[in-house]
Structure formats: C-alpha cells, structure tokens
Length: 409
Image 1 (cartoon, one colour):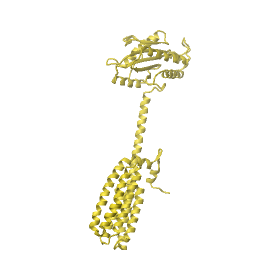
Image 2: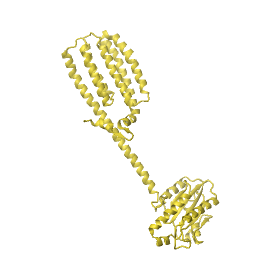
Image 3: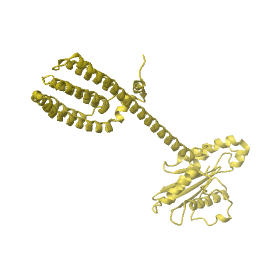
Image 4: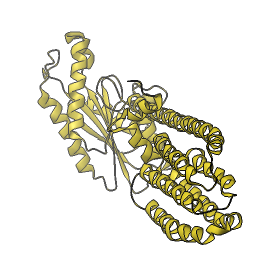
C-alpha cells in the first residue's frame, strides 16, 4: 500500500522512539508559544464577530451572544488551561483543532436561526474555518485533513437549512468551497512535509556534528597517548606542563620521577625488537599499577618513563618509597634478561622534588631528576637516587631526553 513520504518519515524509528515522537518532543516549546499566540488572535477574531452577527443579522443577536458566550468562551478558557498540561504538543494541537471544529458547529447553529436574506451572503464566511485549520493554525497534516473534512461536511450539511437556500446557491458555494478545501489541504501538506524534512536535516546535521566532535575528541586523546604502552606521550606531557605553567600553585610540590630500563639495548639485541616491545609494555603496566589516578605517567623516551606527581605536601620519604615500590614491582615481573648480571629486567630511577615558580619550569625539575637517574646508573643501576637541588651539571652529563614539546612520541 502506497504511503506518502511524510507518513513514512514519521513512522521511521530514531533510536528508542519514532520520528513522530521525537519531533513532537523537540518542537514542543517553540510550537506552544506560537499556538498560544494564534489561539489568542483567533479567539479575539471569533468573539469580535459577535458584533458582525448583530449588525448583519439582527434577528439572531441574542442567539449569537448566548452561544458564543456560554459555549465557546468556557471552551476557550479550557483550551488555554490545557496548554499548560504536561502532554505532547500533538495533543495540544488536536485540542485546538477540536475547538475550531466546535466553533464551526456553533457558528452554523447561530446562522440557522436567521430568516434574514443576508444570511446567504454571510455564510460564505464559513470557508474561513477551512483556512484556519490548514494554513493559519498549521496543525499536523493528518489533523488538518480530518478536521477540514468535518468542517466541510458541517458547512454543506447546514447550508440546505439556511433561509432561502437553493440548489444553485449551494452549487455556487461549492464551486468556491471545494477548491478551497483541496488547495488549503495541499498547502498544509507541503508545510507539514517541509517542516519535517527541515527538522530531519537539522537532526542529521546535529548528529554529524556530535559524531565529528566525538571523533575529534578521540583523535585528541589518541594524539596524547603512546600507542605501544598506552601511557601519556610527550605531547600530552607538554600540554600538562603548559597547564602547570599557566596556573602555578606555590603550595604544591612537584615530584619528577624518571625511570630507565637497564641495559635495554642489550635486551633488544639478544631477544629482538618484538620481545623488546613486550618488555616495555609489561614495565609500563607495572609502573601504572603503582601510581595514583592523578599522577601523570608518560613514556618519555625509547625505554624511559616519567612520572609527575603534584601534591600539597610531598614528603621525600614517601616519594622515595613510592619509587622503590615501582622498582620492586618491575623486578617481581622477573622478565628474563640473560646478558645482565641479574638475569632479569631491572630499572634505575631518578627523583627530584621541588616547586614551580616564575623562574622554574617543569623541564628544569625533570632535568634534575634526570641527573639523579644518571647518578643511579653510574652507581650500578637497579636503584633509586634523589637529586637534592636543580641540576646545573647537565652541561657535562651525556645528552639525555628532556622536555622537548615539539617532538612527541
């Protein structure tokens, strides 16, 4: 069975709900403002026509006042109260449509009581109700269709009972009413279909924007992650360093801890690069398991790792115990390393504790920790060493990795 595109789109599912349900939810707030305004204007227009009834058809003046005042006025107040209820906008639009239908019935009942010959000319005004239901109120097409057919049937059922109505009059009236019914319904359908199409396009664009934002966020996250170990890379460390420098806190101590896998070149030469990668992953996991969630854990170089810990009162003994715990965890992995005396993978650790200031950057703290690492290696490796002050000796130390922001892993 053929169904217009408009109905096909409405019944399409969008996640857990249909397009119709989501469409009604998303357009509720904007639509209810328009609906209140249109209802107010239409009510003013409708009740002001009581004066037109009295002027054109004096014989139904009392009938007009009573029916409009006792029937339509309370219903109109009820409609405004219904707009405040927590129901879907489609139901509120349906309530407005039903009130328009009722107002048509009341208007026809008013005119049927007149014996004035002007009533035949005045009855052409009934076609305005068709316009209200299609191109003024602009309810959903299905509501507009059924309500317009009802109003059309009401008008052309009542027309035969008007004083002085003839077949020629009815045909002349129909020659205007039938095209108006068809054309206004076409206009309403196009409006409904176009509004739905624009809504779906906006939803699609918004979904694409969200997906793009999510992918960009994921790319940003990935760009700060070392693909081998899953730790932060140099680019992520650089961003962290920038944040620290832009928002320095003199009350916070910074512990910079540099870790180097001992004799890693010999490990690679003996076991191969594939096993070397596995070794780095295992060491990285051991380091990460010993750290807090707020520690910055970074792969600093080929076989070097860096931990930056920020705290309000970092005690030297606690940091050294933390570093020693990392060293022990790596030793407990018991990764075979035949070319060394220990016969298993070990690490050397350099530690520096200091504060950041206008004259001190994170790179300088890392350089001091690097000097302590060099000392640990010089003393035999597989140990933790603490640097007591910012190193000024780096000029005669072998060149090692420092914080180069433009060369991330």
